[in-house]
Length: 151
Image (cartoon, rainbow, N blue to C red):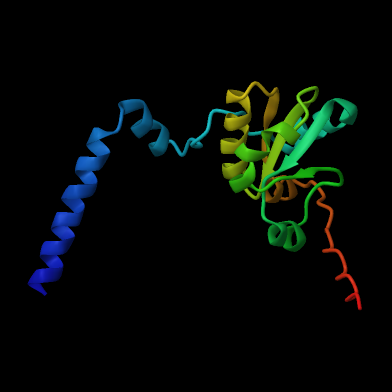
């Protein structure tokens, strides 16, 4: 029991030391529940307004395929997983405003920041589940049927 109590005390002191080393603005941002990205987190209304001019918009979904099929997404989008984004920058058009998508906008926000650093115009980030929670409708995306085996 003494070992557990000692461990908890050491763990508490270590986490306090780490927190004290963080810059004050980072501490206050975490305390306020601020996102860990700089991009604007879009509301349903803001995203719907952007979709109204879809010829000038690129929706970039950074989720895994299983998330797209189980949760749903938007009708037209480019799918590049967050882990592959930096090596896929050459494939992303620069002539449109980009909205990045993930489930609750955390990955989307980080992706938006990366795109901004590389000169892309980013309108913001949105979470598909947040969008649906605000009354928006997602499209259920069915995985493609398996190809028949060739002889």
